[in-house]
Length: 164
Length: 293
Image 1: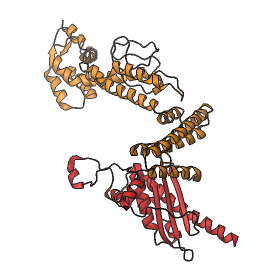
Image 2: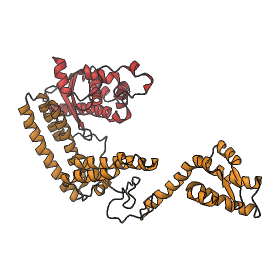
Image 3: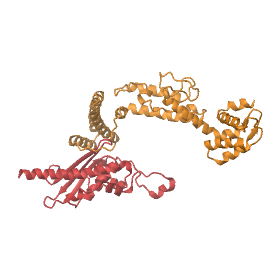
Image 4: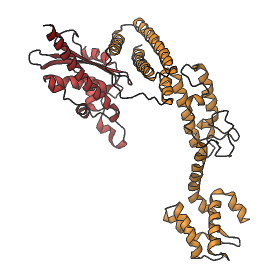
């Protein structure tokens, strides 16, 4: 059921052979479109979902790439006491690389301190997914989303602190 | 008689002229012997045109002495040299095209300038692609955003009747290449102008305003709206719901197309780019929706 839901969420945007077999491609020089990891994140998505936006321990990052029509939402749940990110979810509408980048981002931020995740670079995400040059901006989008989520949480916190 | 034969074939005539000139300089009396002094200028010429040693060797063997001048074994010469000379003429041709007077490469007729110079009106040869002719000119419509798309199909087909590759099977390799490129450009023109979004992007490009492919935005209002829209498409249960959403998207696209036109006419290119962003988002939402239908 989860798979069905996530397939609908991901909008079947990815047109790719179900099991890209590197061995079969061989010496024909056929360009493989998506790296295995990208396909993996698409077929087995992690952390798709939504937190309640107004909860005090939730930070929401909403970013977009208008030229491709991509929109990416990344949410973090933070332990107010320690400043550690205890959970993360994402929702992305766009190409497979954008979906995979945000999926990787949610995996990487979990269990880290907020200051730490600000150091996650798009180049690391791109390398992990072997993104081609034309898709590098998708990883930039994911880096932006992480930063936006942290910024949102901190803004909420300072507002809350200001009130007391 | 040999002269006639030679001048009939353009490629070798040029080399012959040069060699006779040089021969006159070198040995004014007679050229009736295979002499190295005469051979040298030939070798020099051949070296400047072709770097391949086999060619040079061939020249040595092909040397004929006649009363009037030098004569090369025509056919052998042709095969090796034809392409070189064709290329030279090519470079001449494109130069004259970039200047004001457009000239047919085949019959040298100049265009009268009334129709875009894709095909010569005199000899009907397909011309090489000239990028200074933009898509609006090719399809004979005014350079504005709100064009009559119904007119485009007829004009597009008229062009294909004149320059489609299938019509030039019996023509030269050169013309076949021109036909392939020119035909592809006309297809591009048609497709770009048919779709409002690509037309908008193209018309801005002609004003040197380029859409940044990698731009990222954080506008919360716009993004939240698009997110909601995409979620609605994803959650829609039946065809009726989908068609409702589709109608909403159409409305929005129309609104933003009008907004684009206003911005464009008033040269407010930032607003124009903003409109393009929105239209792009609605278009992707619509594409996902249509997949579900």
